[in-house]
Image (cartoon, rainbow, N blue to C red; front, side, top):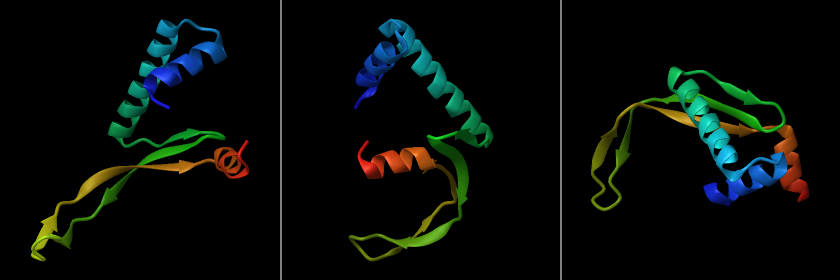
Length: 93
C-alpha cells in the first residue's frame, strides 16, 4: 500500500474527502516526525510505539576491500508493534 492508497482507505473508512484525509495523514506524519526529532516516544495503543535510540560508533569493514572503516554514532528510529497488530498479522485477520 502506498500513500495514495492509504489516503483512499482513510477517506472511505472515516467518510472524509480525499483532500481532508490527505491533510489528516500529512498532519499525523508531521506530528510524529516532530515528536521523534525531540526524542519523545509515541505510543499508539493496539498499534505500536515509535522511539528514538542511540547507536554507538563502531568499526566495520568495507565488503569490497576488507579494509576497516569507522561508522559514526547516530540516532535511529525504532518501531515495536503492539499486541493487537502483531496478533492480527499472525492470525491473518
